[in-house]
Image (cartoon, rainbow, N blue to C red):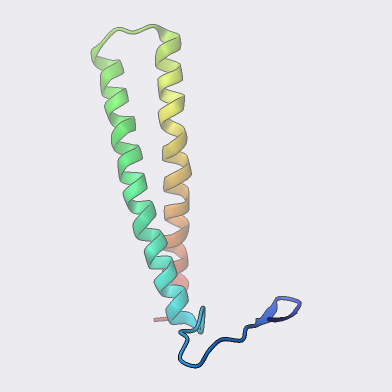
Length: 95
């Protein structure tokens, strides 16, 4: 491997598939990540909504409700924000 700044040159056996040879491989990577975070986001939002529904239906301790809301909203934030980023990046890539 030869590196100069941000450019890296790798040596591989003939017939080896390139790691990132252009926009198409970047698009594929973004699609895979978008699909993965779509699943994560759907699960996180579903759990959050179930907790909110449970809090609305049953009288619980206020502190327990707060802890449950915080614990379930954090995964929503950390999955939905990357998902929107992947969608935005995919929309800006040339077709």
